[in-house]
Length: 269
Length: 269
Image (cartoon, rainbow over all chains, first blue to last red; front, side, top):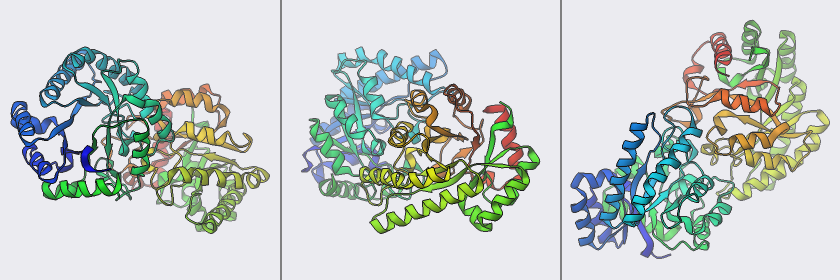
């Protein structure tokens, strides 16, 4: 694979601004970025849209919507409103996909939380469809089930997405979250053209803090290329985002991180 | 539930010897312990068997066999030999079940590791059957897939167990490992009388180190009683083991930990 489909998710260089990330990507020949809302908010969406357009970089996705479950109906409605703003931002940035991190149970009831997620996505679909933004349900590693996402497997995300129009709702396959799954390859095949995004990184050992345990492709135990081959076979031909939460990587200057990301992408993905 | 089925897994008081744990259980009216091999080895299996017998405490399971995948055939054979010794120890202690933590990939190939696990269990079954010890495949939380177990879901464990005689091979359901699973309740029902053990603890938030993130029942987010009700419905009526890896709990004197465990068991399980 050449770098034509490489997207640098800006959380991989969390200390840098959106303008700095866009500049580093343009210098290094990285055609896409994954944008985060808190970084866009620092400069405003209009300025962010101008910066990426002027640099000739495209936005592969916006992170993140979701977090649907909440204790009260009022709070759930407020979160849906916030998701509508996220859809607006994705549209303004020309991003085809809003990534959904669905949220965890407000209390201990994970079954009820899953219903709230389904209801929340249902409430967003017409708004997203009107604005041409697709909703990508990202199953998160089960280690995040208590705090970030009650949707934990590709199978669960696929079945949830299937309740909605394929033109608007799909799934995001991130190797860090799904590599361990005994049904991984069958589920990728079943997901087919519902796959709206493919994210890569690596699982480092020994694992300590699971949130910050991601590494550059090649530094951990994930068979990234084997999974990419499976994603190729289902016909996914969109951007491949490198998304790494790692304190040590965050200490590296953005231009170096982007260069390293591109090199590892070419060598390992 | 009264405490008639309570088992105190001795890792919950990792600083104490087997004799100290047995004594604390006898004093507190806890009828079972879960024994760990490294603790048994400190005094020898004959002495350990005498201690539990004299105290009138029963051993619900021995932890742990497994760790089948290895880079070479020689090493894999050595691990099967070690598992035979674990079966001998379980038999000597009167424990009906040896818990299997299946092991992770020797290299990155998790698919190959799963085949090695199946081969390893197959090699053990006749030996275990002759000695009246059942093999309990314990799916571990996916956070441990890279370092401890390539078998991560109850469904995967159930399908693996189904390849062998139900008289000898089954699964262990531990709420810490399986609570997040979207198929949890369906899989418990499907496992039915293959369930050879039920382990309880809790998942603390915020999660830091996932190995040491377990807490006493009631201190975290797991719906322990809801899961116990489902385990009741499938007819499981054996011991319920409390198994907690937690540095802070390990600092508490063994008699206090056992008393707290019993109180939380009665209140929350």
